[in-house]
Image (cartoon, rainbow, N blue to C red; front, top):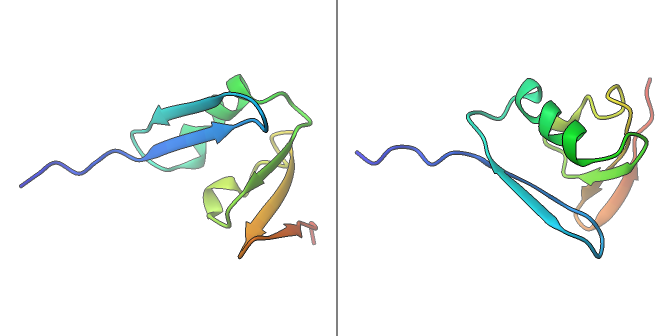
Length: 77
């Protein structure tokens, strides 16, 4: 049986570089250091709706979701 493929986590800056990491798992505590080491605090970050990104605002980033090619503004309740 083939070993499961590791998750790939990628970030891209508009008009800039692509950064890709192979992850052990897809947990917030796993991606947090990659994000903080790569993206300047206060930056607006666009993601899909995957729950792994739920803490971006707590980590100091503005966060927008992209759903079906639409950008959704998040509002804390």
